Image 1 (cartoon, rainbow, N blue to C red):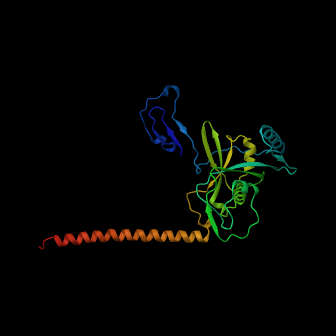
Image 2: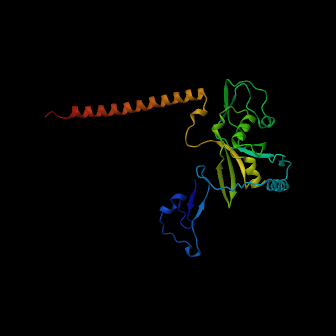
Image 3: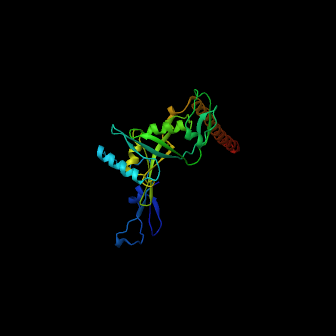
Length: 264
């Protein structure tokens, strides 16, 4: 959450609320001091990221500069049609378990590196937690979209959950602050990688749950939806039981008071 904090009285508030707060703090205002804003960008608050369109010559020059700065063999290559290929590294930061075919063992990182084997149609599923902070390198095209990157990652780890349950984020460190932005489905991660350069601080990619605030029920399987209905029914029954118990208790106390009152 974005916050603003006074360096003198240490009062902290949301940065959008700062204009509504009036404090009599004693700070070095004569030196042009203003409360510093700590910015950890919310996913629902767009930030202007520079993504200029490059000409063929500019793209070729960018690729040469990129390749000269890396210390590995994960180079970018320019194709004759003007597109280019390269590698992106994605860190998986998933809080909830994922679903895989129950006939298969949960893949290790080594197995995921080799990619999925021959599989049949998914009939039964089992859930498990992916290794914390797992990292995967993908070889992609410049026109590969964020949605395709998500789908490729799920295939590598044999995850059968709907890709719409996940989102790809770009992470950047600027002026000592960390910024996180959710990529749209049609954005091209390799293009962003080229523009930012190879520095992980300037840009890195993270796969997380797609928590948009609204539940996308179409992304769940039939067994999952039936399970949700059973949970809702149990909660509804428990809520009704508590209401009936409350009013029954009130009715009993009223009746006891009526019996206790003398006639006339």
